[in-house]
Picture 1 (tube, helix red, strand yellow):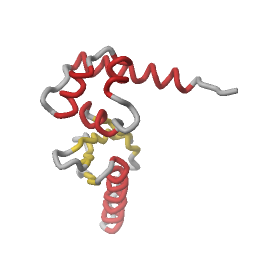
Picture 2 (cartoon, rainbow, N blue to C red; picture 1 turned 135 degrees about the vertical axis):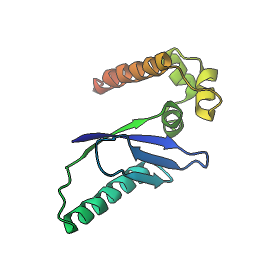
Picture 3 (cartoon, rainbow, N blue to C red; picture 1 turned 120 degrees about the horizontal axis):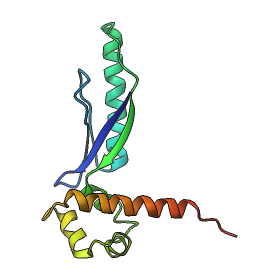
Picture 4 (cartoon, rainbow, N blue to C red; picture 1 turned 90 degrees about the vertical axis):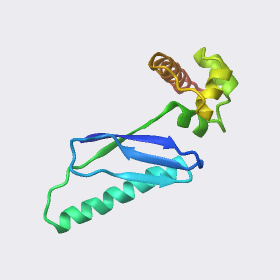
Length: 133
């Protein structure tokens, strides 16, 4: 079963990951100083749930995690490799506006979120075609 895990950055700079699924009888959360630590913590917590269910003789579904970011957390996480100026050129969203999303002063509209996501997916597809000679 595929479940969505939302990754958000807290105001203290640490990352929080949580399952977005109401159909299971349990929830899983993870924390870390980095996105990778939060993902690892989710997997650790899932392993603990599996052991508990096994000990109680209860079935537990095999889960596949799909990770999603809120826009501010994505921008912050990738800011070390993608500048806001570059993302502005790539997405057509003004650098200043992206900065407001990172700091939490503003939240992007659903339409803007889709625009950013589509632009990043198109860029990733283009980059995946790169070959060097």
